[in-house]
Amino acid sequence: MRRHARDPRATPDTFHFRATPRHLPALSQDATDGSWQAGEHLTEDDFWFIAGPNRPTGSFGRQKPPVSLRLMSRLVILPLVVVLLLGVQGFVLHAARECVQNRHASGCFVLSVFPSLAGAQAVIPPTPTSPPTPAVPIAPNDVPANVHGFLVLALPYAVEAHQALGWPTSVILAQWGLEHGWFVPDYTGYNWGNVSAIAGQPSVSGINVPGSPAAFAYARTPSDGLRYFLSAARLPYYVGVAPAAKQGGADAAVVALGRSPWDAGHYTNIGQPGSSLLAIMRDFDFYRLDVGA
Image (cartoon, rainbow, N blue to C red):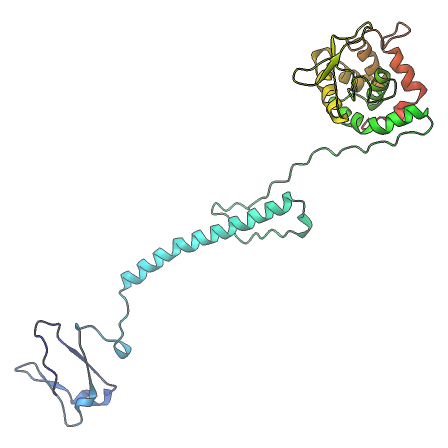
């Protein structure tokens, strides 16, 4: 067989049989020089010469990777698969939480196919819910027109004040109506409780009547008036109103309010604390406007 001359320093060529298993018995190795001798059935075409280092041959000259290399590749892939599964699990739980928090639970399906590594089941915490807002009562038509108009405007804000303070709605409406003579906006705007001046808020001068402060807060909107009212009602002077209402109802709350500095004498007309407010509540039956009782 002839081969082209090549650099002797290069890696020796290797040869491989070309599908001639039936000719293999005809091969023998010379005992003296170690060269291969071909029988009469072998030709040069029966061999493939491949330049390069000697290597064990498999099918068509390919070789399998070493066992250690295959094992190492599997050990590298395994953590990647675990990380991928954990990422998918986190995505599913996050999507489920978002779905529940957005109150679309009817269309959410939580897939529990990815158990946690600790073996515990994934649990989506319930969405915290706030207490339902009570419905605003309808202003009654069997009261004077000015009282009816006042109630139409004031009722939603009185219900908010009831939720914030625990005072009965009937007591709040009677107090606001008495303070303003059933008409707003007036001298103090929408300052429902005629609260005295508050630092940083608009104000007007006091009036020349007993119990008037040096200045009143001026409320440009009903919402401003509600803020002013809540800030005053939460002062230590009025902490007894809500417990009295809880224990004895609206009448007990009126008595507690009549005994507070807010009265300044005009919530009492017959010597009984809060008697002026009690008369309003009974004459117009404001008890029917109490919510959450």
